[in-house]
Length: 254
Image 1 (cartoon, rainbow, N blue to C red):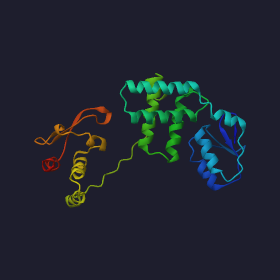
Image 2 (image 1 turned 180 degrees about the horizontal axis):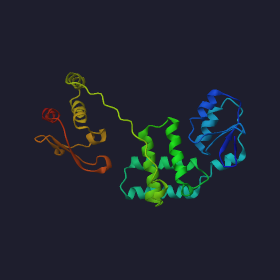
Image 3 (image 1 turned 60 degrees about the vertical axis):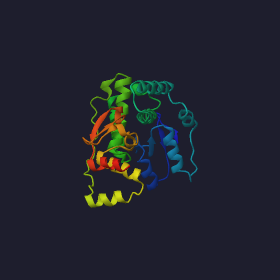
Image 4 (image 1 turned 45 degrees about the vertical axis):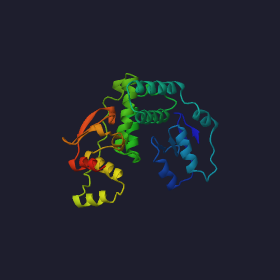
């Protein structure tokens, strides 16, 4: 492994279909027919993947690769710290902050040593296309990566043109499997603990997330109108949801 003229990791090895197939899974991979070699973006993750892939071979790593691996642009790390602060100020959840920073760090490493500020719309578009074509990411995940990059460029860098015209991937729409009443009765009756049974019935009838259900309080439930107040749901908003009265009446037996 060595660095090519574009500061990518260049790999040469004897023909092996399995190795080629694994390299093709790496976002940003390229085949160079004239030099008869592959190249991938210079990141720690990619080097680890290649070392694992060729662990049974005598892998030779050029010194300049080792040096570059441990020198992620300091300005990028500074930007990540400021991004964390900005998202906290805007009241993003800890889970969203962690996901966004992870996606942005991976994105920045894929173009190292170039700074994300120096990238064009074409660079960002090509990155998202490669993620989509790799088959390793669901459309919902790529949409979340898109949101993270939009926050980086629009909210932080104030560069709306860098990502504004890039289309989002379409989400796959699937019809849910709906249980009939007999199947639901069997499902609920199999739960022996009454508190657990009530929790499952509420989640099913009101479309709750688990985190929303466990934060419910008695004062949030309006049995007469079949309404439940959700506090601190997704986006930390407050809302009301209808729940089937049969679920709400289960409180009376508690």
